[in-house]
Image (tube, rainbow, N blue to C red):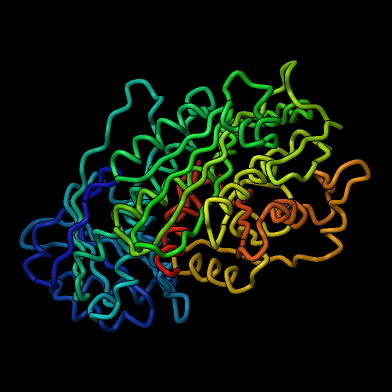
Length: 495
């Protein structure tokens, strides 16, 4: 499979494979270093590595890439030593990070043919390490140059990953599908708001439905009104790009109940009448990251043919401040009959999700996981590497966190305090759409929870700090990260 102009091929360890590549990449953790001798590399390369390791104790730092040149079969060959950590640091997540750094060095060196080897892949049961390595190579190579005139696609780099993992090629093919879905999500996020609109999200969903045999339903402005989805309508009424609710269903487990992934799809967020400052407002093209992750995930779930039933619900709108826009102080009745006092039109994501999670419940979902760039408060609470979880079911929250840990995406569950729920009460309506700054990440999540039907397990994922990266590092590339896509795929596999 080719993703981001990288092709990864699996092969059993073979001495001849080390002779022809432009570059050999050795993934190295401190504990695995003695096993480098078992990789069947040439004597000259082995001696060069041993000599170099004597003088560079930092070689094992995660993502550190050291470039050497060796003589191999009478020709010069590049040799990259890539740090994967020491002791407990040598995890699949850190392997993923290290691989991302390695592949960018391969592209910098303009390698067309490389061999990647790691002592830890010499054991049959290390499939999770092989998958992480493959994903890191694919995702670290990601670039977004769609709107640069004269940009040229980088040359294809063919990478052989030497491994003795059981069914290694199948593992790598799955990693390719997952990486392609994350890259797809990144592309959606990185495209500007004049290119990605609610109508374009419909088009993308229709293409996915056709390609993967998914059931699709689209509620346009008229059908939203017929279903009393006034919360999502209120958010979208200030824009000429009309709101919509898109539902895709993948049925890979017969009559089993559905799990719903519900994504916030604000394709551009000006803040509405409660307009945002102009500094960095252009970054608000990423406010559809949740819907992008959901759409990317269901594509991969279908391509992998996972034995589960999943519905993807995309709540799409554009939040703009024209003469028809909702105002602070307005009261809106959501589809479940609860009334909402609009304190801030910039607290719009929770409103579109209110109608969307209710609809997922009505469609028969027994679990609902919503994902959204919901608050800036999550950045204050947890920084830009960890997303927040607010849930009515601790078991489901724990599964989300575990799925994230397995895919290199970090989550932390916040408490659903009764005081935070109390803060959502309005004097003139059932709920406030914003309870202010204190506990803002929690209250934002709990607001959405008010629209979950009784008995339905629910978890809210606030990716407000993790949806974009300020710089390129590891397998994350500056811009849209596609965060949450891999978590949802893994969660579908677990559930």
